[in-house]
Image (tube, rainbow, N blue to C red; front, side, top):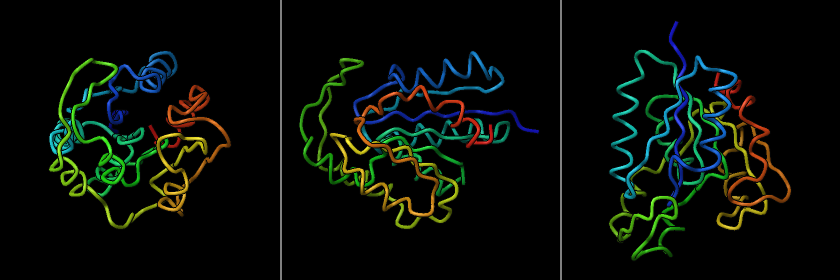
Length: 193
């Protein structure tokens, strides 16, 4: 039987230092030390991020059963990985059309976690489009955790996109997903880790 691995995929201008990533890691350390938690620091550009994720999956998939947790842009990347490998995934306030959203962010960016400065260009938006999954083949692989007062993304896009998936849609909240600490145990259970 394969060992379990939880791959946490952070969002745009985020990092492995994000609160949700750390809550998942702390839960597993305290309650499920048998689960290997991998939280990569993803490159700022979509194509590079996809290569890092694919390389990680190829490194681990033969020895581990992998489950995904993707936040915001990480949710979009989780859908892309699911299409290729079939991994179950929990999506936290996921970006559904980040290539539309990030068009407003072209130019110089500074990651608030790492203070890294970089320039987001039009071809990076094209890279995001290349990762788009037109149709979700197995909605039952997904659990959508969505809060309606997300100030960054329109929650209705995710509710529509993940029809047929397990959905928890909460009133209030924000893009960070308020009170996320209620969910790590249930997430691990959903991912069959």
